[in-house]
View (spheres, rainbow, N blue to C red):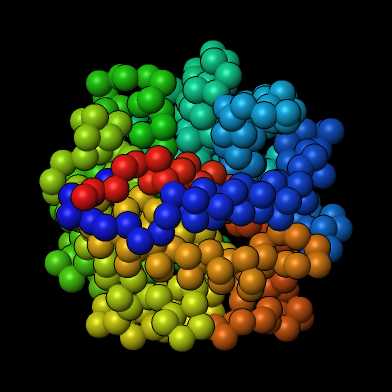
Length: 433
């Protein structure tokens, strides 16, 4: 237990909370998704309405397919009666990624495919670093869970493609997206339609915290199976970009930066900040065995600033984003921010001199919000967005959907699985006299 802390929750209470979270993992999340989303024709079905009815979709995205492959691999690594089922699902997802999304020749990672298994949309787009990060993350997880050599081989290919076409050799880090001629896309394509910015809404010519956050996540997962010196070097570099280039003394990360890493002030994303806190700790552990003092301090500041300004002390849950000065801009509660807040608070209890009881109190409150508001009591699954005071938006806004290209089971599954483990570890730790 962190030095100087006094845990007021008893071991029995911590274990009961972990039991409740474990039950919800399967009942409210995994059971509605699986095996329903496993498409016999390949990959995972993406689009569901509130009642878990499949909706027509002519697209498949690398992000969704990778995330559900990762969920399956993670569940396959856990002992239980459904372990073999999820080992099969993980291989099913891996085979789909290998067949249609990750080039066996070049390692290039497609962003989307259509129902004819062809590249979708503007063919000047060859791929996006964000998409590559999730392909690497999923394939490396399959290898770690099942020892499947093909999964590691394809993760290595995707890493090689990322290095060749998207790495910035001058300023470090990675450009966001690459064109069909192998050049980074730094200005908006002439024929680009729809909302401004690239596939993850990053303004063309800028680098994003979001992409580099998930590259760090992917490189950390890959390094657990493949201690390649270049992978470790890139993991350390991306980690340093977050800690040294994007981190602000007030305790938040800038969302965008110029190619030379000069920050471009924007809103503060509470969910990304608290997600970054626990991913930085994981990256530090992967690299060094124990996170450095700098990493520990950065993670603590990100958690504390998010808790100070992003937490809704009146209704519970976390707002989506706000200003650098702490004023919430988007007060509706989206599903993934709640999941990352739950997990970030759980990991924060292990920080040196952490106010463990304060973090646990916020964790319990966040879980209560998820349990009572974010989870659909009638049909299971997590609502995409909940109004700030509770209640789903008008269904005409389609915010009651259970699945789409950006909404898989990844944030929720990871949060519930890891939070339960941390609570049980706390319960088993002797309290200080």
